[in-house]
Image (cartoon, rainbow, N blue to C red; front, side):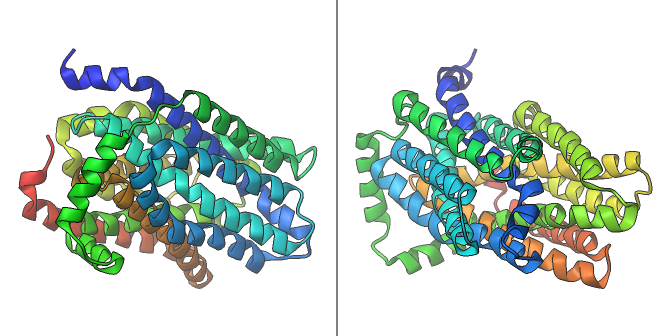
Length: 405
């Protein structure tokens, strides 16, 4: 066993606990998928309100993620992870017992604001406890937990909602509360005060500019391109997820049962790919080549989806897209963390903001294009992935010396 593998093994416990926390959050997000349309109907609201509730969550993440990321660089990762879980738990309870539409919005705003504390801090945590060589594997473990949560979430939500529509949200609140307590008692801090002081001094020496100037500098750096890539991959996935149910209903006559089964199967495939495949593939081909191949595979999947004419065909084509996307996200995150240097929290906060921005823009674009033609969202998604492939190919050539093999 070499030194890097030994280091990853020693940090396996914290990584698994962190992955559990992300799993809980993604279950909470996933269980909303089959329930939210019926839940808002209780308040006499319609599709426009539903879309606004979905968008406001991602928009709050876009605003607050960089703030949480910078704060984690100052006070450490553990306090932010714990705060994110507690805030998310409170938001779920508020949603479950809301008596008006405005309380629903308040709950979603709270969920987006505090939920955004967890993701960038978790990625910074992984960067703290893994070497460059094993970072892709660490990100893959984290991605697998998230993928499994988003797969299991709708199943739990659909089952609990048969008893009461508020039960899924109560379940998510209890689970997040348990995860917060476990994190307080067990999760070790990955970012020591001594290392924070060293990195803070280094950051002050590197730049005394304002936050806006710092953002401009970041966007002009190699990390800036990777943040753009994060937006593109998030846009593509949100484009797919937001319109898939409508697309399946209009084209194939599928109901929630068939759509749920497809999402379950491809979600499990994605989880297996992230948990078992990302580490091996990135070590063999490097992060840059993995990103290029994943972008191309995602584009092909988008195009093939418009050609499927049977349930098996839908499974295969959506599976191709999901495999590409499952490889793409942890590979981009790994590249980004290597560019972040001593600013892991800040960069990962920006990463979550660009991810959230894609989650806002993707559904809006897909909904508008779907009204023109049901195939347009997926054709546009393919074009976005190919555009990302072209940009990444050029970027990789210019920064070939930074490629990891």
